[in-house]
Image (cartoon, rainbow, N blue to C red; front, side, top):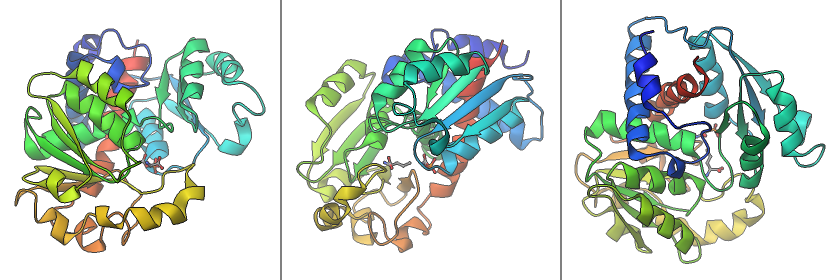
Length: 317
Ligand code: CP
Ligand code: NVA
């Protein structure tokens, strides 16, 4: 089979819960596989390597990109995806994640879950006899980070030594970017307001994952963080589940808006990234989100190709 070797190269992956659980080689192999699958898709080639396979998509939170990219990823690979909306399962309320895992394992070949509490996706993986994929939790968003790394490779080539500045909330998205970035040699600068930084535990974990020229530094001044950056990345100020803090955050975060003045401090050819959904006028101006340096829709499209690499690796025979 055409992609078999590439899939076999990502050897130890049983679930996809965090980039910190993969080796640098496995991440590189996943990226290479995503690039091959994307090329095959763009040239109209068929890659039905998951014929007859099924994936349950369990959502506790809303989604556009994650839902559609995993569902269409399964379709492109010859498989089938089943959407299960938040009101249907009520994981942790109607029944435990352990029971959901054991029941779904009897019906489907894989489970993708978007959860509030990270413990739930960990519990799913512990009790499922099929692979479990983390489609975002309050802790991390590794499916997004793989697409982000793919996008950086496409625009900037080698990730090694690439200067990436993340500006905004120290949340799930930047945590996965940090873990994936350290393994791929990125120089990551993270600017957050005081009180919204990643934790010491996150930085300790990141330290263990450093590879080649990988480095990270925390800032409170966003202008310092973006100086000479190749990539400027931001995300919403209030993540799903934190809505009660919206008003408070709207007062704290405005100095962290990605706007023309901030991006001017990065390299002239810097790209601007955002995992989306975006709130224009809050964390990013419309001028920047829709301007020439923005790659946000390309990045969103890459969710499809990155997710297909994860699916092929975990579910192919
Ligand atoms: N970026 C992302 O995960 O988008 P959705 O919440 O729409 O899936
Ligand atoms: N940090 C955001 C990402 C959405 C894709 C959230 O968790 O809501």
